[in-house]
Length: 334
Ligand code: MRU
Image 1 (cartoon, rainbow, N blue to C red):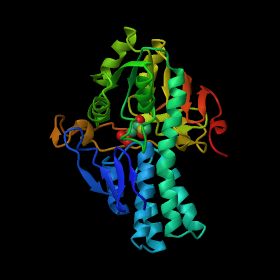
Image 2: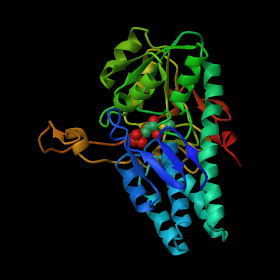
Image 3: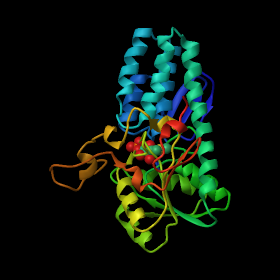
Image 4: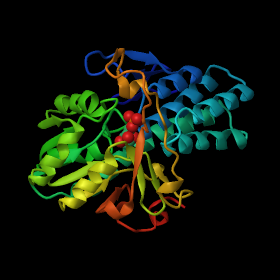
C-alpha cells in the first residue's frame, strides 16, 4: 500500500496505523490497524470513529489483510465482521461494499489496495468540496455551534461540519465556535476541543444542556453538525443530542445544517424511521471510563438520534446545498 497521511489514520511503509481516540486529548497513542479482527474492535470501542473514517479504516484494513496474503475466504469472513462493527454510520457499509464488489468481480490484492486507497483519497477530496459549499453559506463574523466531532479525527481530510468551520475561519467568516461536550462519550470536549485548539480557532466549551441559553440569547448565528446516515428525504442520524439541538435552533430561529458527503446518504432509507440506531452499554451513561457515579440501574443509551428534515434549514453536501425536503437522489452518484 502507498503511504497515506491524515490526522487519525496513516499508512507508513505498508503499515496501517490509527490514532487511539479514546486516549485523546492527553495521550497520542497509535495502534496497528492491519488486522481486520483488531480493527473491528477498534471501531466498536471508538478508538477509530466518525462515519467517514470508520469506512476508510475498514476498507484499508481489508486491503492490508489481502497484502499479507490472506485467502479470499478469510477476506470474506473479515468483511462480514467489519461490516457489522457498528450499525448506524452507512459509510462503513458503503466502503466495504465497494471492497466486496472487487472480490465479487474476481479482483486481486492490487485491485483491493487501489480501491481502499481510492476511498481514502476520495474522502479527503469530499471534505474540501463540502467546505466550499458550506463556506458559501456563511456571512462574516459567524458564531457557530457544533455537536460531537466531525473534524479531521472523523474523516481522512479536514472534516465535514468542522471542515466548513475551519475553512470558514481561514476565510474570516467564522469568528467563534461553541462546542457541545457531547455526552456520554465526550467527543466534543475531548476531540473537537483538541482539534480547534491545535488549529488556533477560538472556541468555548459547554455542556449539552447549556446550548439552549446561547441560542435564546442570540449568541449563536448557525448550527453545523455532521451526520452518520442521511435518508432519501433528508431526515438524518447523528450523535445523540443533535435532535434536541435542532428543536432548540428552530424555536430560536437559528439556521441548522447537517454537513456530509454522498457516502453518508442512504437512498435505501426512505426516511429516518428506517435508520438503525446503535444502543451502547449502560456503563457509558452510569459513568465515564472506570469511574461510575450512578448505581446499577436501567439505562437508556442510544448512540445516535434522528433529526427530521423539517427541522433542517438546508443540507450541505459535496455536490451542493440541498434545500430541506429535496429528494437526495439528485445529490448522489447514479
Ligand atoms: O460515535 P461517533 O463518535 O462515531 O459519532 C460520530 C458522529 O456522530 C459524527 O457527527 C458523524 O460521524 C459525522 S463525522 C464527520
